[in-house]
Structure formats: structure tokens, C-alpha cells
Image (cartoon, rainbow over all chains, first blue to last red; front, side, top):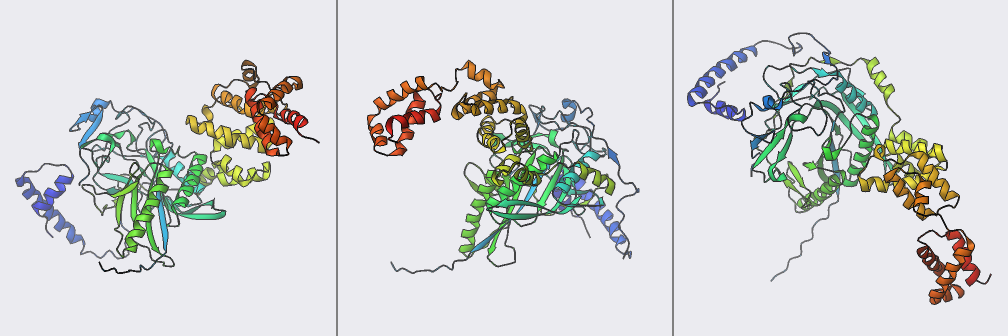
Length: 96
Length: 491
């Protein structure tokens, strides 16, 4: 199984990550290695073995229904590419 | 031009509707963090690294959100899972900070419930497939208010992370009207249970509808359309009525209905196919690794069950039995728990349940609707209404003047006696005073009087009306009637 630079670029586009062609090539190669490593796991016989979903066996980790301080708005919006009147501003969502 | 007559085979279709209802839960804090859920704050002021989806943050489940979801499940006759867990649902949309929503895919908290209600004189039961707990996304506002035309959109993440239940019905609903009546009943139950305030105008209750048609008698489902952007129960019914017409026409032409998401356009009264960028059919569900699974202690469920109030249908039944009200009255009065409580307080203060019911179903609910008010905001008290009704009983004011006084009390909270005195509304029951008006009315309406003399008794109502007009509604109508009869009718 192989990861192509085109697939990497498509994924990066959805995740809003800017990649150079060189980075896309390099990541495609690295992700292919990762995938192939994961492929090897398929060789194991796991018939009847319960999937492990969690590394630690915790249950019922709760918080109380108590209000705590939120972030100052400037800090909350600091990483947003565009802001208007305290809102995050994004380009057109719908396609034709 | 040659004409060819095509005889279309007439197929009768059965409508199949299933609903997905999202209801925000009334917790104080969000589901994974301590940010407030309070509605109406300045944009992006109730956010933190957890609900903004910043890297390295860890969500921790608000126990009360689980309790609310369980209560909703119990009120909707669901069984509660002994163990539940969360999953990630991945999709890219600007209102979703993490690019995945934490939800419950195949281990929902509640399963297999139902809602029963009356429709057209029969009892209907709509199944609840399941209820799961998840998080809200942020709120999008589109430039020019319309998603389809907006050049840009603005996002407020205050809503992101508010706990939400999604209630998924079975495809048991058979008409657009039934969808609306089901929703009204569901809303009542959620409000009674105090798990959600169900304010559609504030977005705390939202509905998507799935609708398909199939030939009558068929057991196979047709292709369904999912309708979004339904902003009121009326919109749900209208949009579904439109879809029934649209899909019927497509099927009658022998074509296939496209399985797609459609957007309801309230102004134009149509649904429109909707495509969005990055839309994916595959949500790549995966178990949420940051939130450990949780076990639901049966003793906890029983404690929550014990907290459930009397639910709308039980209350309706009790009203019929205890107050001897018609089922219709009981249904109207119990749709809103606060109206039902107000009714009971009025009956405790005054008695005569049917009379109280008439006033509440008529004037009270009308004024609530007109003012867009909630029962708790109205200054009128049950004791105040009892006082007013007593004045009507004693003949101090007439019933129609009573309505005027009622409106004043409803808005100002003043006592009935004070309003009657202030505005000089006491009923005129003085025979001498009324006789003069009656004589004047007869003199001014000779034709009508002649008709009554000739035995046309229905015209007497017109003369009574004239007297009422001259006395600005204050005349005692019973006495006016007697005086007119004494003058015009040979006994």
C-alpha cells in the first residue's frame, strides 16, 4: 500500500495545512512507511480477541457541573486567520 | 396535431417519516469543560482551549449531562444502557473546532423508547430508536443570512461543547401533520422533565426530517430525502407537505427520488438540494480515546427515575378524572407544565374547573401568545383570577367586561376590583336606568322591534347588542333581555 503526494495534498487541504511539493513528497514516503508497518499487524491472528480501546483501564471519570472562567476573547481568537466583530470569519462554505 | 392519450397508472403512496431531534441540555457548564452554557453572551466569550479544540487539551465528561440524558431517556420510555462510550465523528465544517464531533455511534446511552399521543381520535405510538449524548458545534452566521448565497460566514464558538442529546425516531410517522403533533408532544415531555428548554428560536431544539414514499402495501423503503433548516414545527409540517408533493410527482413520472440532503427555504416554501464543500459520506467513526467509557449504576438510574415529574399524558388523564374536564381541554392545559400548574392553582382558589379552563384556554393562552410571554412572567395570579371570576358570578361586571378586566390584570397585575372601580365598569343592574336605554333603543330601531313583535325572536339579540353598545358593555344582559321581552313580546 502506498501514499501518493496527491493524497497527502488533498488531506493537507482539508486540514488547512500548507505544504510545499517537497514536503508532500517527503510525507508521502513517510506515511507509506507507517502504513506498511501497520499492514504487518494484519498478519497476526486476533480471532476472538477483544479490541483494546484504551491504554489505561479507567471508567467513570467525571467532572461536576460547575462553571469555570473562560478565556479572554482576544486570547481565544489569537490563532484565527480572520476575525470580525468578535466572530471568527471564514470564506464561503457552500459550493454551487 | 395528433393527440395521444396517456393513461397514467394511479399509484397510492405511503409516506414514511423519521425525525432526528437535537435538544440542548440545561446543564450550567459545557459537557467537556467548565465554560458557561448561558445563552446570549457576547460571541466567543464562553470558550476555552478545550471547547476551541486546541491541541493538547483533555475533555472530561460532565456527570450532570449524563444524568439529563438518562432522564430524557426514561421520560421517553427507553432502556438505559448499563455501559456507554463515546466516538469521534470526523468531518470538516467551520463550526466544528476539532474537525470531529464527540458523539456516541454504536453505544448510545438510551435505546428503544416510544412516545404515545392522540391524533384524529386514535392513539398513535412513535418509536424512539435511540438517544445519544454528544456535543454542540459552534454557531454560524452567514453574510446576508443565507447559507446558499453567503460570501463569508461568522462563527461564535460559545455554543461549541454544550451538551446535546440526539433523539432518533423509528420511521413510524405517516404524515406531515403527525410529525408536527409528535414533536409537540415530545417537546412537552422534555420541558416537563426539565432536561431542555426546547427553544427553537434560540436553537436549543432542532429538527431534521427524513422522508420517503413507497407504494401502499410495500414493505421496502423508498429513497429518502433528509430535510434541514427547519426552524419551527410549522416549518416541519410545511416542508414535509412540500416533499410529499415533490416526491409523488417524481414517482408518478416513473423516475427515482434522489437520496440527498435538502434545505428548507421558508420564504419560498420549497426544499432545495444542498451540497457543501468537504462533505463526506464516510465520517470515519473511531472510539474516542480521551474519554474513558462509563458504567451506569442501576441505583443511579432509579434515583433519576424517582425525580421524574408527572408527565403530560399522565397529567392530562388526571385532569380528566379529577376535574371532569373534556380530554381536549386537559390536552391543551397540560401541553405546558407551567400552564397546568397555573390552572391547578386557579381551581384551588376558585373551584369550578371548567370555567377556569375556559378562561385559561381562551383569554390566557391568547394573551400569552400575543405577548410571546411565559407563564412565570405574567403578573396575574391565580388568586387574582379567582377574584375576577367571583365579580362576574356576583353580577358586578358582565362576562364580556370581565375579559377586558382580565387583559388589564394579565398585563399589570392590578386587582380586579381596583380595575373595575378605576374604569367605572360596574355592571348596570339598575332596572330604572336600563329601562330608559331599552326604550330609546326600541324607538331608534322600529323595524327590528316590529320583527320581534311579529315573533321573530332571533332579532332580539340585535336589540340586546344595541343596548350593550350604548352602555359600553356594562348593562346586565339578562336584565336587558327581560326588559325587551316585557315590552315587545305578548306572553
